[in-house]
Image (cartoon, rainbow, N blue to C red):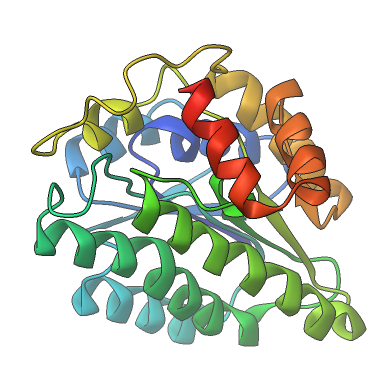
Length: 253
């Protein structure tokens, strides 16, 4: 049995990736998210059988449920797409300690644990994809913790790709720019002071970003930068020192 495992599937890019893997020839799609009602509704929208794991991706019970299902079913994990993510806008002191912990747990810890969990069930031609961000390419003041977590995931993906290449397993770091029609921005602004980022010019749309990213994942690209702004950010960040890049971000925002 070939399956896809997608986190953050109740909304945003995660939900879009479920629609896309519905046409990818897998036998089941395993979805992880906290909101069961949304997952149940999503299940009715696709043709491929969906197995629901309702719970926080950082919760040991959720991970244990996935681990047990893998051991019982012994599937081939054709796609692991970690789309769950969390960001918070604010300066030092604006973001609560529990919010910082959540960002580290969802963006970093869950990404690594899920990957390690799935790798024994992957063979040549399988895909690992983690949703990073253009924030991974340079430090971002007032998104400092979020940008740091995405830099971690980006570097993790690049190293993992080299390790798994002999096995024929492809790893993609997906690095989009702002996406206007997801819940990410609204959640990121739920802090003591989110006024540092008020406008999001040239923000993309979740359907377009997901479609481009999924093509890149299927092609086995190391880094996916869906959209012109994401591509420009990556190119500029390679050429300009981090200190100057941070000043440019300040001017742009």
